[in-house]
Length: 379
Length: 250
Image (cartoon, rainbow over all chains, first blue to last red):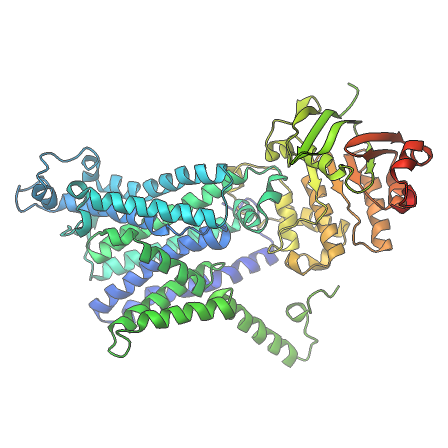
């Protein structure tokens, strides 16, 4: 993709920016060696998937300035696409092979609905898990951004849209499994590899997708289009006077973010072995915002780590005897503290610490602190 | 072909207040036109109309034969109109070089911009621009850290990067030191000819230094047009500025 041979300073900068991403991914890949416990590994895989979801929000919120409170909608759509395909691969108890899914039998459905038909193909399902969320986001984005809806109104509209889709899924029990979601799924199988939720293969699948989505998101932020999206976040109207169609850029980043969330949703179904309306629930969707803010919304790696750490902590606290009742309080306090004292999240804190270390080293080397330590406004 | 930019009978009102009242103005290609007038004369509104920020309630704006009044802002920009705002408008969280890169809008489509920009050619261009506006030292600093004068320069640099045929400048020297103002005047003299410029300014010294023809606006209308000496001698202009000590002290 690079259109020119990068010069040395550009290349150095690229490596410096990629380093945290690659280090984090290396740790993710190395974890199974240290963690010889399938149950724990499955749990970690779950947090990693939530990390991908949070990266997708970081892309639209941190870089595009679009606070999508309905990010879990794309996640849920992806997870249902995967669940529908895996459901059709199970051998139903009542009707035998290639019969109706069990919940449809309970609901007196006679024939497989037309929109379930194509999900007999796994390829279609995976494509749908990416494309459907992207298209829904693009359509929603078309109305919002063409109409120059901004700020809190975007958040309200996205949240409301997610709630509507959530209600439709719960209401259409005979086609979606309603409240129960879609359960009793077959194992995902790609090229002869079976992905057992508690197996290593699934963990490495998730880890690969972590790397892939972080790289895709990173590559996008490094393009000129990614730069323009950040300019739109800073000063939306100014960008128009340079000849860019702002709405198209917003729709693009919104849809890209939705596709990554859809990927995370598909993986979540594989790891959890079911799909449920709670996957596109308000609680999850708002949690993602908290994770993203704690990790640092303007850093992709930060957003990812924020999700893994905070979701991991949530899991640990809610299972510990001491915090069984109060863990939500602890989470709330953490969020308040981060918003008050770390507006750029943990990633911002890491930046400050790194700069401080560099400054110390520079001073120790005897040189006058320059560059990093330059006082603001000095010219 | 007589004129490059043509405003015909342009009117616009905000809540009943007629900011522009049947304004007529035409500018030739390559000209540097200064637009002056007392506060509330409608100078900024005139620029807003041209760049599409405000839509006229009546009248037409034509630029090289294209009717601008019905176009979106980004379409007007693509037609070759660039705008510098009175309150310097840059992207504060982006670095100076990133600001210049965004402004260099050679491609405007999303897909056309999905390529990496770690190349040499873009960087060299950006460095040349930074040198032109004296921001070489600040290239990798966020624009939020620039002083007011530097921010003004950055936005001017962004307009040079944009390379628009018609450049609209709203008080480009506000907040600048005398020396910075002089440098700005030199830069404008260089842009003249290659670009068409319309500059709204209060500083008469600056206007006299750069302008060929001065247009004086008053109450949303064109009051007078001519050289500095001509408009200063114009009786109606004197009346419009009455009480503010004359045109040179406005």
